Picture 1 (spheres, helix red, strand yellow):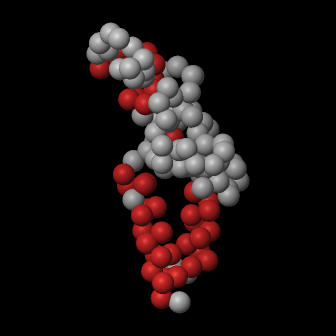
Picture 2 (picture 1 turned 120 degrees about the horizontal axis):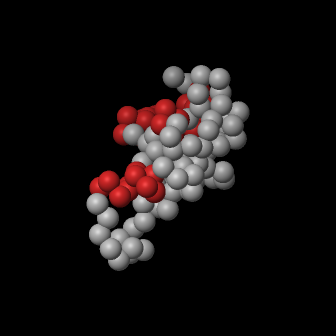
Length: 119
């Protein structure tokens, strides 16, 4: 992997793509608001004084409203095979944050730092 290709991949994730969307939540505008993550679509304990059971969260998860909590710095799956993106929490193949997706953004900056320090 070259320095240029690494920078292109990072830029792509951060919004320089055909959908013009940053796949890192909270970074750049626009970024997706309908993340496939039930805990981030339900009200926080500070907003609701009553106990919510696990099944109560589904009522919030299945709405079309933006997530009530922002999952800052999570990276989503991204575009589909046709270079399209749907900001829809039910479209989990695009809007799902996962450790195996976020781990990629650890390696790229590490490579950039190592490459830049060596030059």
